[in-house]
Image (tube, rainbow, N blue to C red; front, side, top):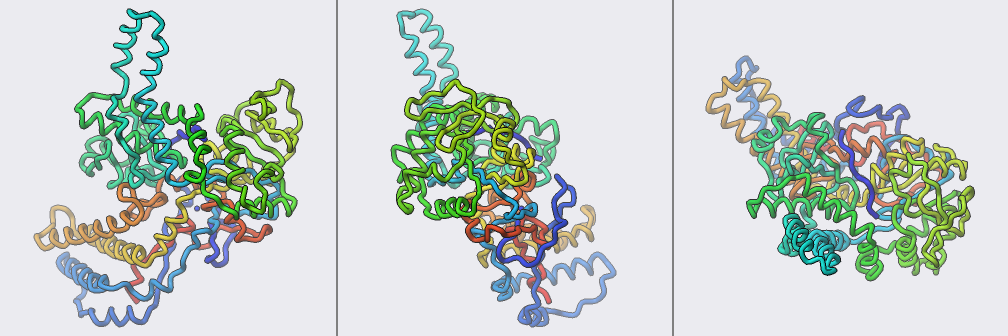
Length: 578
């Protein structure tokens, strides 16, 4: 279930879009990148509102005249903010189950479909994050105790010495009282192993002003600038950052912040890198030891989310003559138990899920799978051991462990462009296939909820307010220098800044109270997580079975008007104008 996830910094077409051009493939970080998609309206009611509040103003010839004009437009805007314009209702709604395209994709050219297991084929309830968090924190407290217990073999003097040394590093029992907070983390955060900060970064590698925490305390802008000199993360500082990118990182991010907060509250000195290493080691342990797997299979109704559409999608692919393979880091017995549970009520197909797949590979050790030359081993599930014979062909009735991409391609003869691989982890699942020439599909579970929020009129209303105020602030700063500000200028600036901050806070709270939306910053810029989606995912969606909404021969195109993530619609300030 766990996978390598560390790399630093530095999206598609939905059903509601129009025609598309084929020349909009992105060319890399910050190159040929486009701003927001603009939605305008000629709503007559807005024109009437403009006329109602408009007053004749003289031509601006002085700073005071321009400030007076900005003040007038701000007052007019505040009157417009009293009600949500009807024009918002005419704006396009994005499909929460849509497929969004970064690179044009012809499904009729795809002959082979590959899948990760965790959070790709199998989706989990929110209870799983609490399970991982609880198991990891207990391991951090109890691992040294267990080690010492094993040493109790009459070595009393040595035991006392070793016990004294270990006790300096054991996490205290009070840490077992920590509880996972589902409202705190989002995917795509970064942890600074040098300074101990957990932060959200934007597309350009700058720290989100309201998204940087030391422990569970949010840092102010002044504190951020004091620690980093600037909000932008430079190359040297980037070396100390680790990305938390997959869906299992929610529990990891929360546990890191809680441990940092413990040391702060206890007024104890600590090395931020040690906390990260200890938490990450604990998270890795609960996966590799099978603790999480056993916990899930012991109560699948609590942790696994059944979905009959998944089987329908896989069977549709088989009926169309497509080849299917499963490539996962999880052990086979865990995958088999999960797939049986997920499909046992779907057309009586629970005991034969294996018939859907031409190749099943477990414990693949991604991302090393894509670059190593490890041999495949045939796995005997009944005896729980590996065969010693060479694997030079894949049998659909057998299960394989380990292996590498080089051998996989040599055995299957499946060429890159005809293969698409689905995974939830941008680095360990998709980066390798992308570089190898496979097409890639990112499965991002939280996409549905975020699209539902941004489709809501209240969110779009706040977004329009934000952009109006942002434009007024831009004009203000272009007009008045710092040493020219009168009392009236400063009063207007304070009002504009406060109004903008209120709009930002309102939008942020709709997504996540601590870090806001996963894909965009509070100012509407793409996040660093979004950049990696651009980089490694040809298409992205919330679940594989969303492909059922499209014909198997469909051509998926980059929207012609895309200027930010394809699923994101900007509400323009012109919504309130003629």
